[in-house]
Every structure is written in C-alpha cells, then in structure tokens.
Length: 82
Image (cartoon, rainbow, N blue to C red; front, side):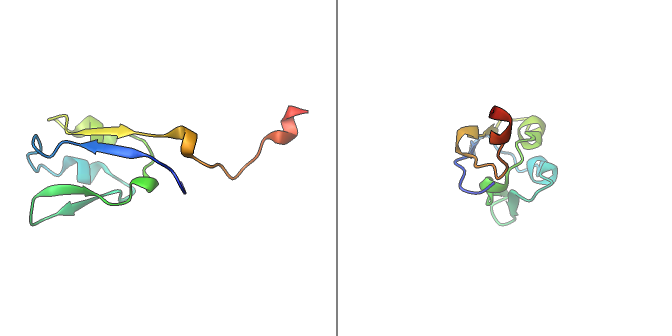
C-alpha cells in the first residue's frame, strides 16, 4: 500500500528476543537486529494486516494497527453507482 498511515505498536521492554514475530512475517515488514536481539519494523507500509506477528508474540509486545482510511485503492467502482 502506498501513502498509508499504518502503525505497528511495539513494546520492547517485554520482548524476549524469540524471533517468532520475525519468522511469522512473510512479507518482510519485520527485520531482525541481531546485535540487540530485537525486531525492527522497517516496512510498515507493506504490512498485509495478517496479524501473525501479533498472534505469535507470547509476551503481547506487538499490536497491528491498520489505518484503512488512508489506503488508496487503484480500482474504482464508480461504474456500479449509476
């Protein structure tokens, strides 16, 4: 998605560095900081809102917050509004 205001809320204090969120992210939104043993949310605008990262986090460190109002869809359905 382009020009979105999606957010992923992350609480680093509770994170134990298990990498489950990183492994769950199939689109590469979450990368891994090996030095600090913490996830990095690099490409939030590409998030598919599957919430796998949020679901697998046993400590509740992650909350996916999609902003659907900011999404711009390329397809128009105006033709059906006649």
